[in-house]
Each structure stands twice: as structure tokens, then as C-alpha cells.
Image (cartoon, rainbow, N blue to C red; front, side, top):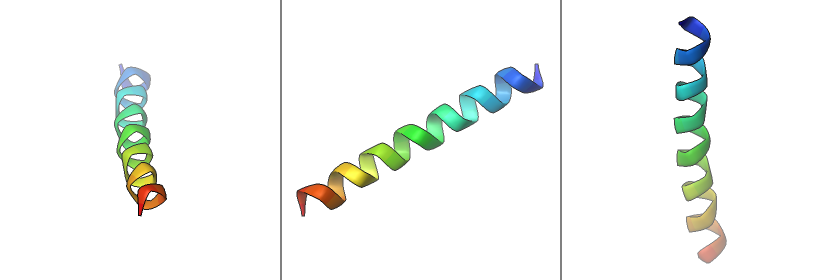
Amino acid sequence: MLMELGSVYFRERFRQNFHLLLKILHL
């Protein structure tokens, strides 16, 4: 249960960071 929650949390964090990185690279 806790591991599943952590997995989802980190996946969301990773996706947000990835989009942020793309924005920075496009500037």
C-alpha cells in the first residue's frame, strides 16, 4: 500500500520535473 502510494507520488513528481525541464530547454 505505502509502496504503491510512493510509486505514484514519485511518478507525478518526475513527470512535473520533466515538463519543467522541457520548458527551460525551449527558452
